[in-house]
Amino acid sequence: MKEHIWRIDVVVVLVSVAILISLIGYAQPLVIAPLDDYESLDGNVLFEFERADVLLIDDNMDFTTPDEYQVREGSKVSLEPGVYYWKVDGILGSEIRTLTVVSRVELVLVEVDGGFGVTNAGNVRLNVDVYDEDELVGKKKLEVGEVLKDDGDKFVGSYDDE
Image (tube, rainbow, N blue to C red):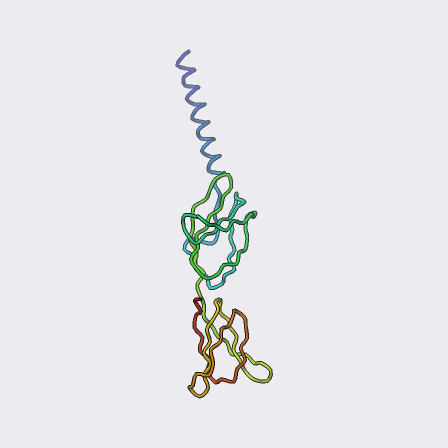
């Protein structure tokens, strides 16, 4: 009789442990996107996950100063160029993933008031040198999306790291 009760106890304990393990596995947030080591030229990043309600994004892996977003299963966040670490928290925390928003320097020729100019079509502020007949005639700072109309015949853009 004692041996029979002992076997029942073992079965009950094993079933309880199996149920507990499955509940913990279900409580763990499921991180879907972006993939680890994701790189993008677009700073608008879509985060997809399940079983979590807080998205944490930081520029260091220790999450000492994270940006915290209260969200439900998916959120689009605008990020400046740089390397970021992110995770989600629900009942339990998720794995930590890395993503990089790559700087893009791009000047595009546009028609402006019957003449021509350039627009900053990249994702970072630019320093633009304006030349006329190979002579430097001006230096401008151009924000993302800003249009520059000038009398120069050559425009050279470089990343403004200030």
